[in-house]
Length: 395
Image 1: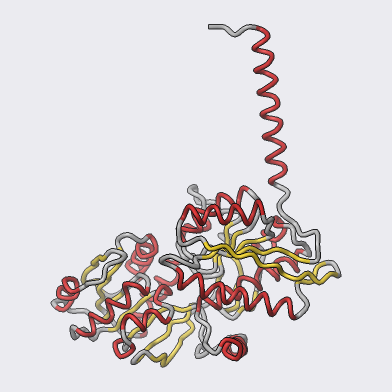
Image 2 (image 1 turned 180 degrees about the vertical axis):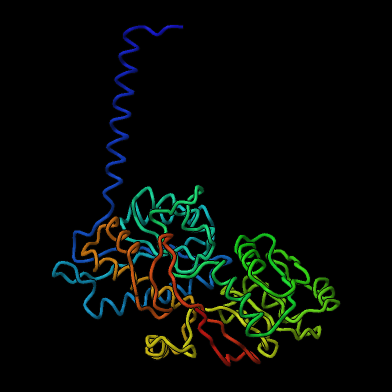
């Protein structure tokens, strides 16, 4: 059926204005956010409640401490001005929908020049489309999934960055550490079948490990009773148990394994980090346990660590965790990016992060590579009776 001439004209005009307005919108989005006052707004999209609250709260503490220090020291210096950081924090409740909405609010409504967070990889994936659309860089302190900063075609996400190392990076390190340092020529892997984090670590460890992997077994996030799995473990001959997961389940596995008489070395990723692991496992059971961390005073080679720990302990009466340190470094990375670009414009901040070199943070000296990942050392810490006895920086 043919349209009438008048209707064709109306439709043509409508189509023209639709394209025109869409082009204007795209152009507007491309300009990014910029401060026009004595403050510069930095957003934080964090898991302050929900299943990953321990990570979000620790990161938040580090962010706030860094902001306080920077503002006390005169702020961010741009074109002769000293801009104070205005921090806006959103709780994403460890929910992907809420996470996306939080980043959308921070980028489009609050007009943040940069956003720190989310902490977990799934949250970053949910939030990135919103921040990319608004041309605002998103710097995840602790999202470790390998593909986090990549598009489906393998090209880099232009506005996605991270402060931490990737799953494969630490998986490779743990595999080498098991064979070369612990002299463990046999291993069992016990991973979370519902977690991309766990699967990424398993893949990297399996590919790199030069010993024999006796078996790969699985649990599910939220499990509490590992009796059946541990009974099977007791009948296997292995020298190290690799648990690529989070403290919630890892703490209980360690406790139940040790109570069952399993004495093999236990290896874990940065997901072990935090006091909750020791509370769940019982400090007496955290012996011959090793996991990767992002910083440690015992590891040689970083002169920034001890002053940071000492000042933090003086203020908060407790030691900072690796996640606290990652939050702290994230703020200073953004500060350096702004000062090097001499701009608070979010697109320029993105450029500054993409070209960040030899940034000296408390989690190490890092340079951002072409995939927006930091190149830096991995720390492996060892525990006996719940007490840290050594920390080794592995390049």
